[in-house]
Image (cartoon, helix red, strand yellow):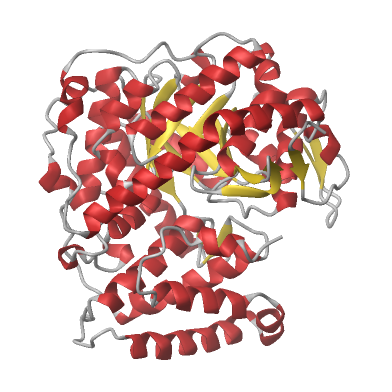
Length: 528
């Protein structure tokens, strides 16, 4: 064990293949070199949020106007990332990885973040699975319940990996007495074990970066990449990242984020669910920005439309790819009519994205790959749409802060409570990607749900029938919805699940005097 490094998590079979002395030494070096900067950036986030809470509104930075106005391009992007028309995402369990790589999608994003509950077992087993993808002659899995065997096919999707955000830690590994950043743990182990193997296979160490809020955070990641390339002996610019623009502050710094990462960036992505959450969080202390039901906050209107089209314009101006948002629908196998209606929504959403100029899109289920692929094949005959410069787009601060028209309904209020609690319960039980009411949900859904409840309660918003939303109403409806859930899933499953803890946490977050930045921070204290 390297000096100053302590593994606090239990060691299960094969963990020692990932947690080698050399790999832990690499993580320790990342921690010692970059964790202080990471914590300073989190402090800067909090200071900027305090200014927003005091009434300042997000806007483009005057000090970086020259970056937005001057011509420049990102570095060349590897050929296997030129066609990204359909990307599938999911957690890092072995069956999921194999099915996603075999799904027919162009890219699979293996997720250590919002679609993955960060139990120690999940995080290390995920690294084992990804290492096996690159190092095993046969990458397979046999389902212990059914005996069915899954094996990697001959033409797998390009693999990308999403580490945790900068705000999260991995408490099961300490360096010099402090927990390492989850982001450095996830990225560092994957890169250390697999960067050279991926390159030897004709691909590379490709990443998605979540929840950045400023170009200074992108600068930190760029320096992490440079250090990693130097340490591992791979060429500068080998690591390529796509940045999720899923926070409101980042939408005002897209040019700057690309510029900071220009040797290491492949594109930007519309992380729309977290973006809605961030819109509420960033503007939480300003009653002018109360949103309608989350189902009425759609991509073709108001602030979401402006941000998506501005992202396309920004990326294509700089030679980077613009990837669209998630289709969370999952097949409704016992109801063909409802299933077709759901797939029709997916097609309409993907037609909007392809028509706007996106170079690709996300889906959450393998059955949606051919649906989305058909749309992009029809509307995007080339590998991408970098030539669609969208010079017609002219959105500024006002458009990026425009609140969509809509209503707040009792059904939407109840759904936020029910879905929020159900997701948190699953997350506490070790599952990060959860099928709920015919959608594949991740942590972003729970964040939106509790953020909307908090916002509506704080400002005493009214439902469309005139009912005022109060703490007392919330508590009454929470009790009713938990009774409904107990009946819906069965008393035994409810009572032996972790619904009591999930309900308590959702209640605390929804009625908190101060808005909690991320529910995953207090929730992390409740898992192994």
